[in-house]
Length: 267
Image 1 (cartoon, one colour):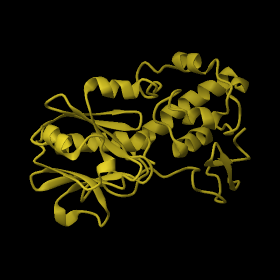
Image 2: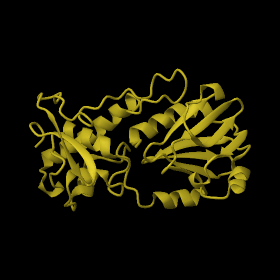
Image 3: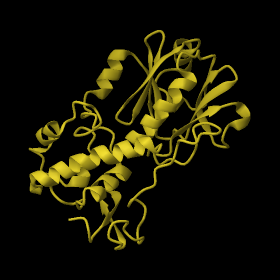
Image 4: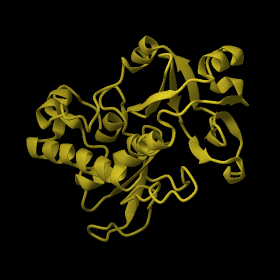
């Protein structure tokens, strides 16, 4: 599932491609991927300019000229592709927004969706989401404040979108490996140095993920050299040597998620 770095990469790459561009055609191949009748969706989206593209947690929001918003959550297996018809990946497209001869394809939206919402409705969707970990207001002090009353395990807490926004299964493993903390350690057992290290690792891994274009290998457009440059330190590397201590990477199921870690240098 795309996480904060992947969605931030999409945002940064899409802004110059479709920002200010007019949607010339709307194609809905799967009505369950949208939240209103096709006719209503089309009438409010067709001929609208993309006024802005923002990210919140794992969501992208396409802001339209008429103040409507398209809220995207790709969920598991979802992705996007931008290009001409002849460049389209050989995958089922659930929703397609056209900009003349170029199209933005929403692919793999079996669980994901593109919902048409007002600004107020978007804010309502965000109500239960925690702070953005790369926001300038997300200081070490703010992190301490958030964590001071928590009692759960580290992995489970990082996955909780109400605590911190945008971290999912992959990057939680990467962050905990970088911080040298075991995923089942309890938040309330951490000393100030552990918490400071965890905070720094959240910042470092997410920023690195964005700089390197996230982990998703499929390009956003033909010739895209940015997407998918991030190489996992620990996630999905069961049995491989830890890059820090060369011990084999272990795997365990935590909160129904496959969790990867080093038993030797994570404590």
